[in-house]
Length: 383
Ligand code: PLP
Image 1 (tube, rainbow, N blue to C red):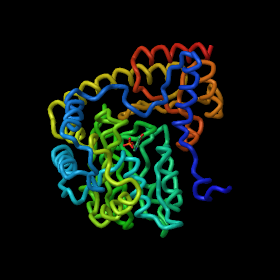
Image 2: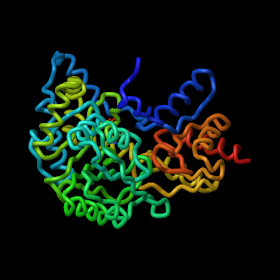
Image 3: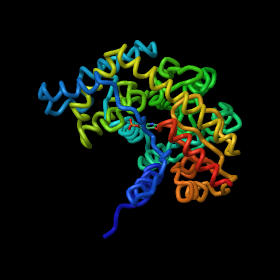
């Protein structure tokens, strides 16, 4: 009994694989410090829980429209106007089960077999997988550690071919934490515009910036930009699975047609709660300020510690990840990460699937005590 060729080519996410291995070791009694997680370790603020309870009391048990409730799409439009200075209409918005589903919809709606998508590497592991599931071809452009993993627009320009269909921008970046300076974002948007290709701007980590500023992409190229965002990172709501996309209406309608046949509207209770997360501006901003301060402290501790141990890591300006060079432990990042897990009991994600050979991703979405203890264990491993 054969599986389809398409599914046989789909790899399991390496982030999840290392997380699972760390969790298994924990279950068998090993005290593992997992720095693998791609999610905040904080709980969302109380007003979001109140709204979720209210959703139950209101009896919100029915399907919402496939594109998301009108109230949430209005709240999304208001958020982008208030925080990012650009206007959209609720009909330009689709809500999905996380930014991940929205990205999946976008690649399905935009790519024909053989179409090329330029990805800045190191990249988030699901981009290449989703591009390939849609029949697309990944064209990676490496951003160097020496430049803090900020891409060189000239190198990106050189990657365009007549088959290029889309360019993906992710600043702040998972896995590098790089925040692209405004001039780099402008140069990349100008390239997409000049070449007439789609620009997919993954803004999931917008609220997690510690140096520099977030550059909204959509105003630079409104007719070709798909903004992807969500409740997971900046609002600490990973498990409630709410993400959204904003873009040209014909594309959003196409993505909605697809989603309508695959999953329909996202979870109604979570949509209602996300309205509160977006609309109760002051409470949410206070939560984001507080969590940012915690990340800043952990980042300083982790990056200084890694560099002191000779595991060179550029200082990330955003997100909650640092990419460290593990060649000192083993030139093969997979083996080095396995040694960290099995011998030091510190879980990290090897750079292999991010296209970051020699590196591993350390998530500092964990307590300062854990960061300190992880560094102590790594120091011991290094002797
Ligand atoms: N984009 C990036 C860069 C991510 O790191 C993630 C999650 O790890 C996502 C999108 C999708 O997140 P979600 O589906 O939880 O909204």
